[in-house]
Image (cartoon, rainbow, N blue to C red; front, side, top):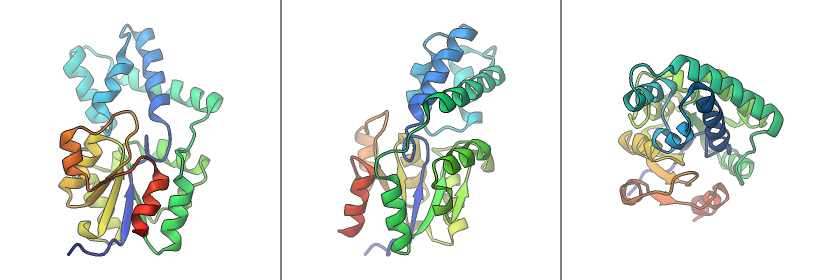
Length: 218
C-alpha cells in the first residue's frame, strides 16, 4: 500500500506559468543577433535544465566557442522586456490547485531549475509565492534535473519522505528527476508530449492542473 500523500512539489516553468514559450522567443531573438538562428528549437532538448547544464548542452552542439555567458545575459534581458510588455500568464488551474492544497493540509514545495532571483520575481508578480512552504532553485543544487538532487532537497526542506510526496512536472527531465528521487509523479504536458518512457515513469497524467484536484479527490 502506498504511503499517504503529505506533500505536493511543483516545477515552475511550463507548469505554473506559460513561460517556456516566452523563453523560447527570447532564444530566437538572441540567436539571430549572435549568429545562431533557430536556436530556440533546442528548447525541446533542454527542458528542466538549469543554466549550467544548458550551457554545457549548447557547447556540445555548437562547439566550445559558443558565447554562453553572452547568450544567457542577452536572453535574460530580452525575457524581462517581453515579460514587461506581454506578461507571463499563469497556467489554467494554478491558484485553484494551490488553494486546494493549502485547504486540505498538504505541504507545498517548489523544485525549479530556474535561478532564485528570476523565480521569486515571477512567483511574487503572479501572486502565488506565499503558497509555498519550501522552495529549491536551480542555483541551490550541484546536479541539474534529471538528477534527483533537487527533488530530494525539496522533500527534505518540507520534512516529507519522497514516498509521501508527489511531484508535478511538465518536462521529461523533471519526471526522470522526481522518479529517481523515489516520488510519485504527475505529468501535465506543455511543449513536449510524454513518450513511452515518460508514460512508464509517471504515476499519473493530467491534461491541466485543474484535473489534478479531481485526481487527489479520487
